[in-house]
Image (cartoon, rainbow, N blue to C red; front, side, top):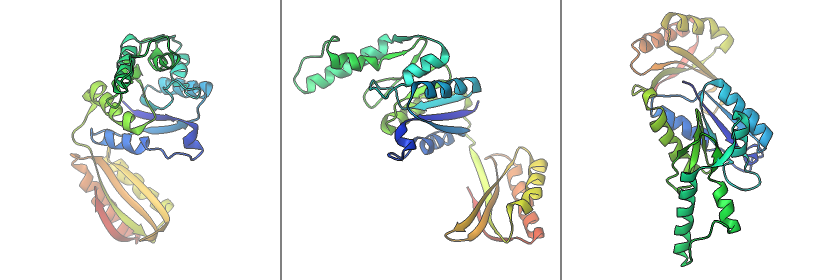
Length: 267
């Protein structure tokens, strides 16, 4: 199973807000021995969001979708999900019951009676409990306004304080069978006096000889400490016995090439 992330919102693409979901989902997955395979930002808009969700569904991946599940005019995610999967929108009784309970609590705090369903404000709130047919709830520990899952697509609010614990809940409730306690380990070094193209044959040789160990290369032209350099290394499951042998072979190959190794790292 691969994991993907879609973040909806014009504010991210305009620079008004900085995304916090990608690094957090990477962290949540890594804590469970998993990895994020891809991420995508999509503007607010019914058709654009529906197209992104169709592609996500067709991918076969488990995909988290952040943002746009409210009830304001620029929130289209619930409608886009229904359109993408060809199902109807319908009230979810449990989600709407949670909304009513939350509204009653807020009214009680002000010394007011619980709002009636016919009140315009309450009708708008209840819209947040209208989901595509077949949806199941994702609990929201912050204010109990639920998100929803539609098969492998999981929809949470754009607010990190709500979205992040909800994503963790999904990982633990829906994908616990995929958790791997071993995690991923890396060994790498800072290489100078060489270019990626020159080292490509060495990298290909290491991957061929030590599969499933993977080689990674992170070049920099103006690193604040090392200037022009490459961080070159190998990564594998933490219990993979080939990881150390692969790194030693990589290091020896760099020395034979004549590259300079200034720093070595273990993660």
